[in-house]
Image (cartoon, rainbow, N blue to C red):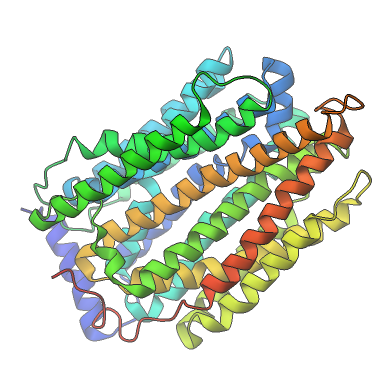
Length: 499
């Protein structure tokens, strides 16, 4: 059963599509705009730790492989919670779900601001992530529900600003705050913005999608947590083992992850027959959706690995201060924000292939440039490589998301959004862990002969180059995946049906 507000909104959306009008009602535009602002604020927090990590390591006395969990745990928590959002969006009205998400994020931000040590700060990041995890699937499902197919590329361009620009600007914002106020104020400045967004959302947002009485499968949740968590924690433990023996063998984490993930997938296949799946895997019946998710995974993994590693390299090898380090990513982030809406319009007119091939090639060029950094690499070199990567990802993410989600049947939108966001967060957590792991192992290997220690700039440089080499190889795979992404022939009429 749905509320009258939901039914009215759904009829409005259907009327808009039926008449072929590209203009959204003002109420719908306000809902999307507020969701975009709130999502930008919460996603920004995924990368604010990248510049702060060296500072936190000194202040809190933790090693790099431990400190990176402030970012990895955030994204891993999102990867565990996001599979439930398909259920949550179907079960809880939009306004209520928004209030829950922003309340969790605000509470975590306050706890982080007051945290007395690393343990509480890590807990605060997990609470923040619990709210952030709901926001992106809620935003994408709302856009797919309200926006006609002819304008989806342009609107997905706006979402690309949130997904790409917010993380890219995170290092700049945190660098400025660290240089002038200290790490606590990374959270102190975000808190009032989060609270204002919460208040405005509680007042303005109305439900825009139908809700029912879907039941939550309690078996799927721990399987998802163990599956995604085991894989990413196993990857991060490789880096920890370069400095200290982990409490369990690394292979054990991977085994737990693979087995749990396999059981989770089998459980979903069983439950979707009765329309009870936590994450409906019928979205993968669309070849366009499947290849789009592969491209999104590769692009996100590479982006977050670079975002976490460039600031670490700039401070630990080049000796830059936090503000100068953060400014490296600013031009790329701004250009990405400027380009994304135009890229959306190009998609609406010409489709994805015009954008994806040059976009993925730019990403690859940037990664191979970064494999050649040294002890005295000029800042302009890092800025140019970051600009190339940012513009390339902007030209990649918008067509990938729009094509993939647009190929689905309407009633699978919430599950498609949940799958997309799950892939993004698992890839982001894995990218962070992978790049830091390769860097840590490479630095430890360079110091093995006794001439260096793992924290010397020369040793860190060896590890950084190794990590960027992995990124370069992944970028080639991204180019190949992008070649297979195409525009749905007649969305939504040509969308993939579940039955």
